[in-house]
Length: 230
Image 1 (spheres, rainbow, N blue to C red):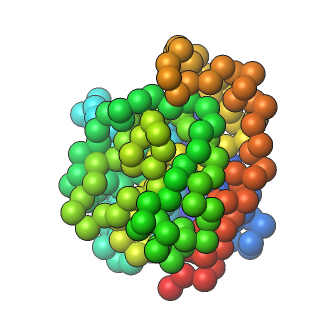
Image 2: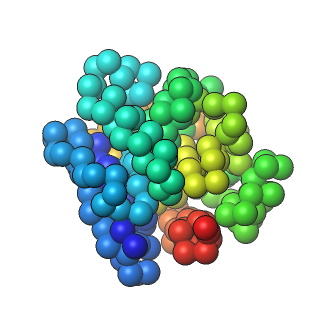
């Protein structure tokens, strides 16, 4: 089984997604699309993972390669590939369905709880998670919601955190893959995002969180979605 990852910035890597994939024997490859690396054929992988990045999906015209990525996502979905998106990646999945990215009610930077919706409690891959659990966040925007999509989890700062676009396509506005090392990269590269706000933690608090438990929740989803799902 092959996992292909699209990367938008050196400091937003697959993190625990890649750790899990390697631990479970998946072959991993990647395209750094912002560096104009060529995308593979959609026939060359089983699972597509689109990561986050500092680019704004509300300003796609400023990043022509994001238009190419949206087309690529649409192609992967059309032939039945499993597709996951994180933050910007989740927004680009929504764009591929024709749903425009929107500004979130609040900026979220740090670790804050998610709550499953009724749809989340019934979802075959998300229902195994606790009804409320901690997750990392680093965002201003949120995905649009096409008619067929279901919101599976939300937070106090953002009503669209985990989304099922179709049985094989999931978006995570939240970051279940981060760890202190990768959070430190974000702190260094995006200091402007740390300006005080209702849902913005200070660096010392961000780096002191329990990321291992957060990874355990992602582990459950990936086990069900990738290894057990059709």
